[in-house]
Every structure is written in structure tokens, then in C-alpha cells.
Length: 129
Image (tube, rainbow, N blue to C red):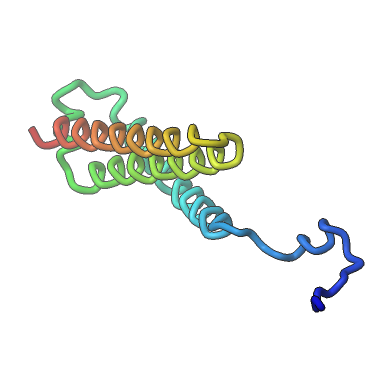
């Protein structure tokens, strides 16, 4: 004799308010936090860029050799690339299925790591070499 309980609820009714089976909420909150962090960083980056436009190459190197502009530009690049990686990961998880998903997630992480390393190298090279 089985003691299975019969339910009159539909599968949709049982699924509503169950929450996510993965980490979507945490990922969404980190994405929102990085988007909010990008607002002042973008304003600072545009301000630095506008002050550097009329200057020649040596003046730009001298300006980016200062700590505050270099840190703002580095943070803008790092947070922007991290935001891109999280957003692309969400798109890949939602729309890519099967074994291709894992390879695409690995490619996304490696691409963002490579772009981040190149940005950091370029900024430090211009500012400090």
C-alpha cells in the first residue's frame, strides 16, 4: 500500500513561488551592484577622457602616471569587464543547452580574463613605463 498524496494543483501551481533551483538571484544582485558601481566610474572615466583629449601623448602619459586617474581607469575597465562576464554568463545559461553550454562558459571566462589582462597591461604601460 503506497501513501502517495494526491494533489489537485497543476505543475505550474506547484512551481510558482518555489524559487530558482540555481544561483540566479545572487547573480542578478551582483549584476545590479556592478551596474550601480559603473555609474560613478563612467562619469570619472569620461571626465578623465575629456581632460586628456586636447593633450599630446607625453602629457597623457604623465596624467595617467598619477595615481587617481590610473586607478579610476583601471577600476572602470575591471568592473566593466566583470559586468560583461556576468551578463554573458546569464545569457549563455538561459539560451545555450547541452555540452555546448560548458564550453561556451569556459570561453566566456577566458575571453574576459584575456581582455582584462590586456586592459590592465595597457593602462599600466601607458601610465608607468
